[in-house]
Image (cartoon, rainbow, N blue to C red; front, side, top):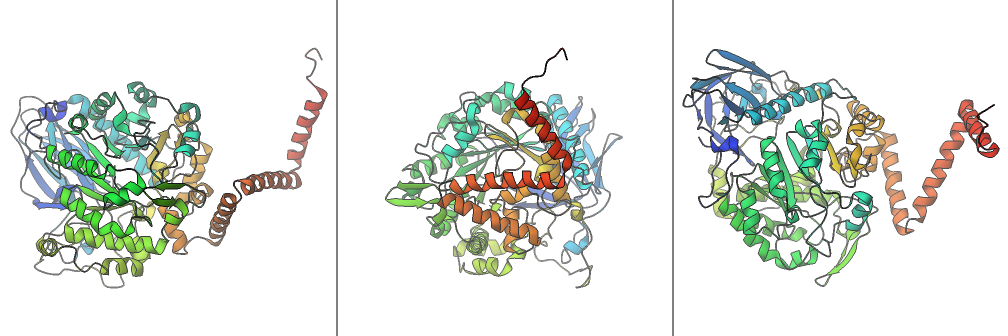
Length: 623
């Protein structure tokens, strides 16, 4: 089985590890191929075998399993030509660096335990792990990079499971800032361009180059994925080819957002075969609505996307194309049209991404005859849940893979079942032929850690727990309330963020090493490990986990009151053009000083000495 399909007229050379990649066949122990979202894989029982043509040279296999266990308790042993390697499996997808000895023609795989049958009671199969198509190559440098990333990921998960706040590991996902300029001017109506450029300050023109990667050091080397969070358009970069090559050599998956307006033939060629998840912001189902958000280039983008998808060989090939829809008042009625566009283009995935909730953002634009007011465009939470349910059903019927970022952290369908199901049931039939095809398609498994969908038409039902018995543990109880401050860090021109929903930077751009284990980051991790939000999280009102907890009324009373107070304060600040915020924080600062003076005599003595020193002038060094 080949891992990558290339368009025959693409002149750019493949990365070294793919150029000489050898075919690998799933042999005994594996079930039929399945697909979930952008992932194609096969389930393996407790044991399985991969076969390939022998070689006189040592080679390297990138084996990509998914473990449902989140606590490193599942292990996979790989044996080839008498050589055994055992790997602790990190929850979710991972890449294992397997050495294939010279002369070996197959690999034997053995898991130490199965995925508990209670999670798939009507499926007659014995399931242990899912495995993506592996890559067998000769690139020793890439193998060393994958090995480094795997070791860091295992250490990171072990430290997180132990509740450690000071980490020896570095982020497994690194946020980067590729480019700071944009070709859409004036900016998209929901983009806080001026605010973010003000935050960037002296870093606004800082270039992102190969030297930047060297400066990142282990933060770049150990990361398995890169997430571009720049306020700008990456395809305006001249040296982007060199960066793409460096990411390939380092075994990185790059998540990159673009507006898609300059996906020229040349830029398409730069992308073909790259390990890139390309997120294209479209947010509209018609050219009229797109013009209200950006400009008149809606049809240009659709043509660009069609050429890109054809050039890469269709869905399932690199780069993976994700089409993004942010539901707002201006476009929410075009959700159905948007899903149909995704189906027509055959994108790899549709992304449902919430417009960042904010009580303080006060953007207002007049564009294409439409007055866009940010605060008016924010949909009520209940409507967002309804939209999520409707999008899921539309995508199911039209067979479009869906990534719902509104469900960041999981559990939305369970926490708000009534609104979610109402949205799902609102879809009568998106398209009869597609719906009929979906009924006959093999179902796909759900996200890691959730109960998988059983295989189509199981022969027998084999439930293993009673209605009141808890499901066997997968180790999720050891996970913190949010994993981001352990697994991620965003090194951006506007500053260091512990997650993509962070309200404000925690340190300047150049202080990523100091920030990673800073007192603030450790305090955030400590709170989350204890099942509570840190005040920084409560200030990050756009965080879906915070919003869901607030809307479901599961926040502790003190935190719920603090969140309400912050929302009221933000509204007052917006209504008074910033006057309220200045007065409030000045009063808060004086109150804190007064409280310390009343409760800590040493605090008073310390500041009295400082005051005396200021009034008496510099001391005589001879005294």
